[in-house]
Image (cartoon, rainbow, N blue to C red; front, side, top):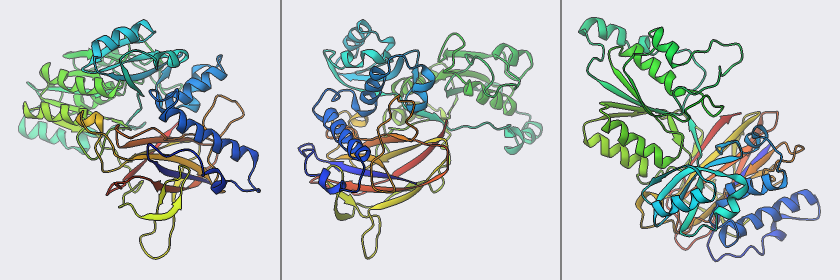
Length: 458
């Protein structure tokens, strides 16, 4: 069994007075060490060396520094929320002058640097994250964290939509319409997702009439076969071709960064797309105001484009409430949320944790996000932390081979930034039950505290 907790910080809150509350004589040295390390991590991302990197990039940097010979497979197993390959991690860097920042970051090892206004997306060497954090003109760096709303299924899209009936009855097939697609990749998967399955590339699909010949690729994730690609975008385009065989298709990868995702929406519209679809979600997109992706959608809809996004189905894997002060202190010394609306107090929330999977908690509160409006940021600082059933925080993920269950704690410094925290728990081999703890400290409590819990099988 595991516990996850949400603690809230105020910028001036010192990391003192919390240890005695959570540690007693019966607790192990391991739990004491895990608690102290989490407190130090929070301090480091607030005023220390990780202030511009945030908790996840700082944890990644330290893990790789401690185990410099670790390969991609082990890094991805412990840091599945991040996009890591060949010793590089995908990030978005923010500053006042995007063009100047791109030049400086490229000089420090950034690959595929692309400017998006004040932001720069690209891949940076993990070993140089500390150096990159000192770049002149850099405000902060965020890792690319996203997932596809897709699975390994055999499509019945044409029949379920009854588009075969529509084509026959109304004599329409999509001719004269162009559909733009945003997903991970189009034609760079190195092989089948499951060994032994049939595998085709884009040329094979065109030859077999699973894709039309009228395809325009504005941007793919990679130009050559690469382990980062699964070509979910091409799978989407195969379904679209079944439904509307006369339509032309265009593709733009949405997996580089949230800024590039927004640019891709506009680029597809400018390329002549009448309809645009996507199947991707970025964990840190704000829920309470339109972010840059929603702004891009609004822009193309005003031009007459029909836009459709795969919302996914999180079912009951969510929680929303007004803040209720439990009167109990959390890891930060802030006030925990009371999950029990009636009499009594319950500062724990129970969730289900799938075996062998990564559980991601995307937590938002009803305050401004600087990435969305460019002027105002969050007035509160809130943290998301996983605990075990004894109330002990899980260890931060490292590349130690003996570590089975671990977490990427959501302890970013939110004051003046985004009203979003993202945390992840890397699971063990058995299905478990999780409980959650939520606390808050601020002079102006947010009116709503929605949590979305996502499962990422790994």
